[in-house]
Length: 240
Image 1 (cartoon, rainbow, N blue to C red):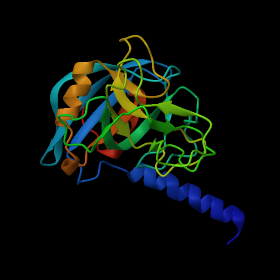
Image 2 (cartoon, one colour):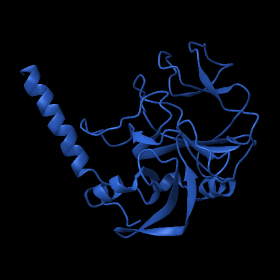
Image 3 (cartoon, rainbow, N blue to C red):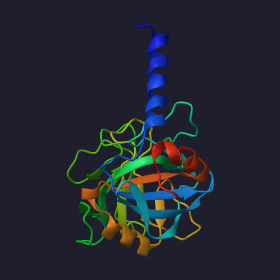
Image 4 (spheres, helix red, strand yellow):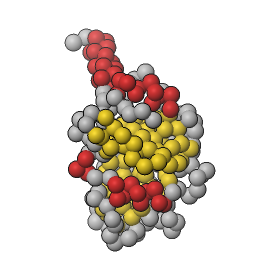
């Protein structure tokens, strides 16, 4: 096939997939995070559960903070429209926008009240953010693998931010410079942004620990309000 025609066909396929995308029928738990605009660092999160064909709110919305430079489209379960901007890159200080699954929970305690897979954050636990590493965007036990990275996120910190956290499956499998180590975790304060994660009050992360059920295939939908309203009908998203 002519390279130009092949590129055009790929573009049409990606845009078509994005337009037709919606919450999978197998997912019955949803967390919706919205911010006022792409540059905002504060926003709100709301939990939902599916009842029949519809999602209904669970509890009250609660405040969150995102990346220090706001949001950008990330690599989740939906393809990124090539025409959409901004797009998340490694080290840009932005939290990812889009639709994402959840990985494991992690924390400082030896056990946790959660149905998610749980990993204890020891001093050897690191999340690799060096895109040249074979372990890029992975949580590893640095005492058990051969180190091939120059930078990483220490998971057992001296502060409380990672006392409880949940992995957001962004850029999985990892594409170089696509962004790494995205979590939901405890915030420093209600006005202090993160370097790319979504953070909240300790009681709210604890609430997510106990509520999220892998059997219900929970998802995170995260984006500015205007984009949420734009995609709401096409993606079959619930009313905010």
